[in-house]
Length: 395
Image (tube, rainbow, N blue to C red):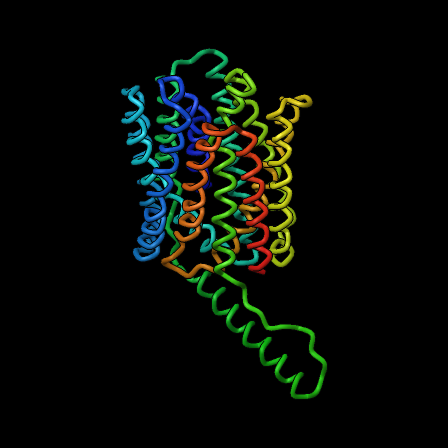
């Protein structure tokens, strides 16, 4: 039940994710403004993520930072309603992003400490699937708001109200773990297992037995590089994508929301599939497959940009499958990050995702504005492939 607050929070940000870039264009902004807004926010979120991850583990209080995130988002989204100045809107969005990320590291720790290691993949998948359903409902609310021409002020007030509900529900339902030890146990188990394998291999070699097995530790650096590259490609693609659907394909706003509803539906499907088929060792190898799949889907968007065949239908299918692939990737990497990243540094996962997101959120709109969307799709696909190579080296 403690997840319920996150459900309402994701409803708000699902609606906001598509509404906000379209709103910036409506009040006189440009793709450059969207890129600057997203990139600046994500760059500043990088140190914020590390701070929130450090402070929540140091104090061993997690609930308070989740409540800070939801309450400040409520207040700042309300402030969005009283300005149509693009510059001020960007500043408010940046402040909100820094405070908003406060809930991410505590949420990951709650899952890691409330459940045993063998259940991490299943639990992360359940959480992400549940909250992605909230995101999907938020997109449906955006579809209804645009269909019935709800004003921007009322749409933003709805986002603010949903965050306030998330705050209230979380204040009642979330409790900090009494004991914090699961991640420590996992680290000890990994060290013992590595040492045991070394002893076995050494004894077999001394006995003259042929030995094909290698003693190899995961390459944490490649894991982090892979996260950055994947996040860069994702942000490069998805930051200008609503504008691509709205302007390049001339789709009405409510149809743009439908596209993202399908993307979110693909994510929900992926999360619940990951929950039902969780297996740690197999999942490590599936990370690369999901990245390659996403790279191929991004290339297919070139056909959409050229309006070659059934553009709206093809775009909808691609977004659904992209959501599906992203869900699998996120569950696998989140679970591994809680195993690989030590305590008090849990925010590093969001740091590396933020670095990639910041770079991609500026480069994507820049390429779209100066060249065209075809270059965005091709560059994003190439970076996905580089992420695949990084994760192969990690294993």
